[in-house]
Length: 401
Image (tube, rainbow, N blue to C red):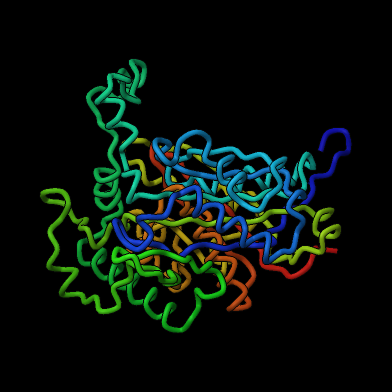
């Protein structure tokens, strides 16, 4: 580094998530800020860090309107056990928002300007429906996101994730049969992981009220179809006429939150924090906004190059199943081992709470690397606008000497 300044390492010292809820399901009455505060509080409890020792809270959320407006990150901080002096801010990098929050947190502690960051995300899709911010703009004369300059570059094109999923399948020659089989596998893996208790350590049980007013505890992802069959997947209609994507091979609309605590070596020593993994390398890229969902491929290549690793060096991959065509195209392009990909299921079964998904996947990756006693994990997420984030972590139980 110029001037002889050395970058600090960034360590993950805690990672938790809620179990996801289906659209209008068991979590639909929980406020997103409260969901966020619950996972933050769990990190404080598990790590034992003083409530005034966190330098910032960085939270991802996509639909920043209604209950998710007015700087959700700060509202989460104020609603938690954290000291009032701990600030908070909010990130929108679409579906990768909380992975970007983790990257910002890592960069902060690596730089030495801050020592401890809580990065996470949340989305209450039952309450704040996808696209509600744009619909509000149209209904109230507030304009549309696409300005004149962008229209000149992409005349008449409405950027669509659904079109992108189909274009991706076409480009990488992914068939309906492949998609159906992969969608089924996602449910089978998620059901098996749940039955074996693999998610128990990472999930924060939530006290909820049911529609009849009775109390219950939510601790199991609600969207898993343990009884899914290939025949059932094959019977679904495609979302686009002549297409290959169905509701069964798209991610589920979900409610949920997740958060990760990131600290440098100084903070680990000072507060005796439990090291779980080191953030090895990170990347973010832009790609074609029309096909939109191809970004994880160049993002992965970039993060592997930064780490000096090959795809075969990675023990586990978490690639968000926004649509089944995304991880399937990713695996084909990179020659990735399918047995390492989304080993406990993905968003087709477990749900995709937009702003919370990056931190949710990171939480699952940290815990699964520990359970299997493996070394390297990679996470990649496609995002609206054609961007994508990727990160490699290395499991460890202590600061490197």
